[in-house]
Length: 354
Image (tube, rainbow, N blue to C red; front, top):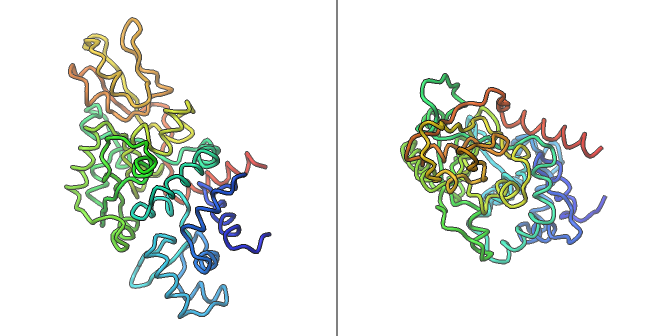
């Protein structure tokens, strides 16, 4: 094992469900050197994926508690590790590269960092994102686009979960900001990434995002829908985030739209769209709206369910109201929580790589 803290940190991050794989070019190490001072990389190596107090970390590692507390607080403020409070106690844990360090860098990213991120994505990250064939995200349409009269569980919709969240934040989209800095930007809304609960507290506490209420979050969601963005959140029943994804910049969406990968590598499509041929006027509005080209015109308008994300954008934009979006009969329900999802991805990756 290398004694270099950056190599060691890379290897630690690569043990996460969405890993941080080594590259031939070494770009992943260059990113870490840009983000972490050497002492910070050494401090990050003291952490695990499981939350611990400063006292617990110090006792486990034999580190001075007072100096450790200050370093961890500063690193959390800089978006390098994750911190949260429960019952007046502060907990720390290692942050994955994605979803984590990458997203936390949204306010400090510059053109050079954007170049490095893109190079790492192209060389290694995209393949790692889908290697387990267990999607890390689920797609849920807004309720206005879901077929009425169907029985839905709480995790099948967004608005009730949003209104139940104890804390909500909104931040700029790191994917679109990176693309813009790399000269490949789009016109989709930038401030569109929603976080909830502990994640929202982290964003607000560290100035990465701003606090909003449920009404504003739902307004942002509806505006994102009107703009043609896909609503994707972690593939679990617990709502921790909503990424409003565009087909051109989003890390997962690009694997589908630009490289033609199976959507199930990245996205769990709980819903699917149906077009009523009796109501359809063949105006072809849905052909322009679908972000993954799942709709085509043969004798009638037709939806390829293998491609369809169930995002509901086609239904919301159909002037004839000829499209219905409903739960798939053969859907795979999300995991109970993010931890269960992460363990399943890790086990699948280990089996594939063994």
